[in-house]
Length: 361
Image (cartoon, rainbow, N blue to C red; front, side, top):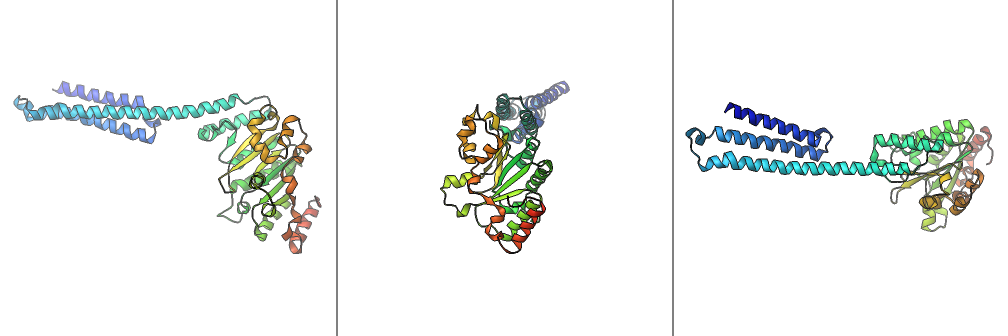
């Protein structure tokens, strides 16, 4: 009897080991781990019920075989073990689909890498940044286009070393995000992004132009505070009163697109939540590749340029490329903003422009 008990215990431990090895318990999803746990409990219940059902029953002691023995010693253990096998199969299937999902995401990412050239430093930086992001969270980088879904302003700053002449960017996010004194609304990554523009662009005498896209009339004091900080950092500022322009919905949406363009090299286009002006990811476009794959980039280019086909037909220099921007048709220098035209606002702005030796740009 002791030998038989040992065999059952050995078989029980062996089954536990097999289940854990097959399902890779630590790497399984939460649902899979729960099912694995129940599998082990059912195995344990079935085997223990079988053993004690036989050796602790009156039937065994009296050497008889009544109905209760069949139920407790055979039927119930078999049912429990059957349920255990069923749950084990379910757990294996769920684990399989978890792995299929991961491998599908990885294959999409690798496919995107295969379609990316590595001829230039920009391409290499794209690849290195993608690999880094992949290690952190592969779910964010499976769209085919090169996209950044989180830490997007910090991601943009990774490419700042590749600008040499001029940088154009817009800001259609809420003005409160720029207010470093507003702890509840300010965006720390956005402020870091501005500081990196100052250190990587302006310190190298690269002209930075930011256009504020105003969908509604802003608070004058808040707007002036943000404008003053930007001007002191030698950023060229413009504005577009979207609420005053008589435009169709598509044109308004195009103008309200947040983007950053560095020379004729790299375009970063922000995507927004529906009916909200909150960036939630950026798509990146290498300008030199648009000649070969124009259709892939057409939607974003149409939002940014007056004539995107002209960009696809010929290699434009920096001035021509920036001259093709939609915002240049509608924007005005910040010192022409009506609330800043007189009084203290005007004097302070003109003083900053004179101090930074820019004058009326």
